[in-house]
Length: 426
Image 1 (cartoon, rainbow, N blue to C red):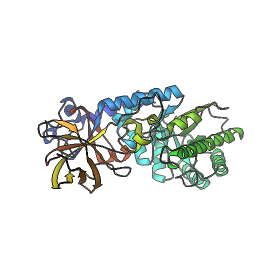
Image 2: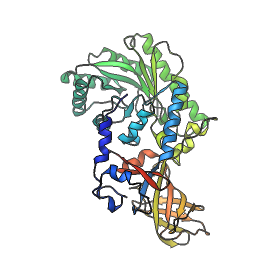
Image 3: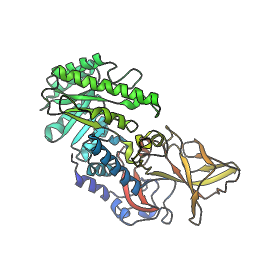
Image 4: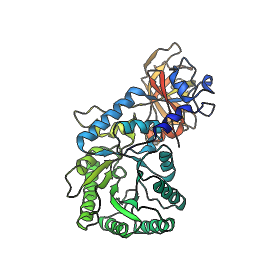
C-alpha cells in the first residue's frame, strides 16, 4: 500500500494560530514543522491547559508490537483510521506494514484520498449519490486505487447498482458481504440472508463480490469466557459464509478473497479463525485501530495482549494535563478539563500524576475523577491529599476514538519535550 508522502510532508507547512488550542502564543505565525523542530517544553514554554499529548516511545512500541504480531500470525492489518484521522500516523502505520486503511464514511474516505491512500476498506454501505459520484471519479482517474465497501441487504445492493449504472464507472466496485448477528450492529442477521446478498452482488454488472466482512466487537464487551465464546461462534459463522460462497462458485474469478473482521478487543480470536487454511486463496485482514495509542481504561482491560502470555502489552500513548483551578472543599478539586477535551464514553479520565510549581512530579494517590462538565473535571480527593490550586494533574484517558476528534494539533513528547505535532482532520 502507498500514500502521498509529499502531501503528508506538506502538513508541516501549515501555520499555527489561535485556532489550535493548547499551543503557546509564541508559536503563532510559525509553521507546524518549525515549532516541532524547536523541541519546546510543555511547562517551560507556556503551553496552555488543558492539553492532550502523545508519548513518542509508546507510539513506536505499539506500532512495532502490532506489526510483528500480525506477521507472526499470518494476517494483514488495515487499521481503522477513524481512531486518529491523522495522516502522519497513517504514514507510520504504513511504514510498519499496514496492508490498507479502513474508513467509516465518505468524508473520511475523502481525507484518505487527499493524502493518496491507495487501498481502502469502507466498513459501511455506500449509497449516497454524491459520494458515489466522487468515488467513481477517483477510481476512474487512478487505476492503482483499490476500494471495497460493505453490503448487508439486497435492497442496499439494488440501490448501489442502480446508482452506479447511471454513473457508468469504468470498472466494477468491489463489495464485501457483511455478516452481523442478532443484537449486533449492521450486517445480515443470518447465513441465508448473507448468501442472498452475495448472490445479488455477484449478479450485478457494476459490482464485484470480493469477499466477506464482519465486526465481532459489537457482540461482546469484556474479556469473560462467555464473551469470548460469543465471538468464536460469530467468527465460525463468518468462515462458513465464505465457504458457502466458494462452494457456490461465486469467488472463482478472484485472485484472493478478502475476509475481514477484528476490532481492538478480540483480534487474537479473529486471527485464529481467519488464518486457518482455506480451500480458496484468502487474504485475512484485521481492522484494529485503537492499538496505535492504546489507553488507560477500556482497551487496557480488554486487549488480548493483557491476557496472552509472552506478549508485551501495548502501552498507553495518551495523556492529558490539566491544572487545578479550585479546591472549594477538602475532598474536592476542580480541573480545567472536560467533555470538550477528553473522552468520557468508556470511562472517565484516570488521575496518575501531580506536578508542582517547582516542577517536581509525583504519583497521585487517593484521587478519582467522578464527573465531567463541558470544561471541568471533578477530582475527588482523600483526606490526606496535598493537591493544591495551581498544580498540574496528569491524566490517563480511556477510548482513544473519542479523544482525537477534540484536538486539531497534538504534541508528541519525549518526557515533557515536544518532538513532533500531529494534525488531525475530522
